[in-house]
Length: 263
Image (cartoon, rainbow, N blue to C red; front, top):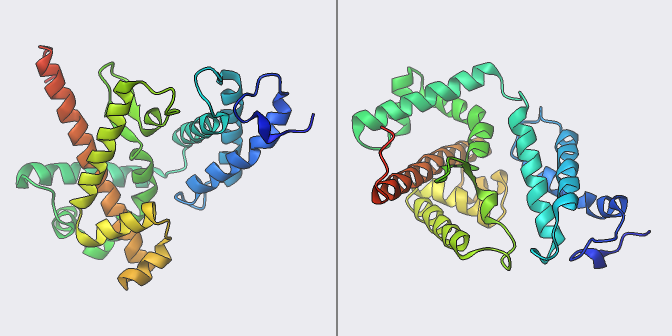
């Protein structure tokens, strides 16, 4: 049976091979977008393979009664499968992992001692490296920071939050999730506005205007390497601020319910 786009909303009765053939380009597209933000050592074909597994999972679990678009549902499943595969791969060296842990501890210590977010100069001095060396470390850690940005803490049941949980079909979404999604967008927008000017411009142009690092460099009149550094710094800051926001909200909600504090 020749695959037809007419079955986008209802795949019942359509052979699995036909559906996979029809939506294989979608898996490749999602894999390409994710691969663009990862080191060259990560094989795109591995991501595509994981995406196909996600596609098959979507075929098995899709319910036309609850979602009016198989394509949207499949894209979420594909992206989730690829991210799960990345988390299971040892594509980051132990040295980079140690640097990430050391940087995180240093930033927490300075935040506690200073009562605010430390500047790049302050972090570099605490680490005992030059500002240029510090920026090089941030660049190497960029893939870790990007993947961690998916992590929004845990919910009331102790399960990890993921941005994908807010991307369900609008016609199937329940009011509670809609409120969370709206608030999440507001929090992200607020924190982006609070970034230093150049970091804010980089995030806006990269994620909202789909410009690449080289194009952004021309806008800011800086090198592509500097844009990469600004991007890594912005993502690191956003991740920390958003995580603290949701942690604080969870603590406040627990206190309202009269639950004991974990501390």
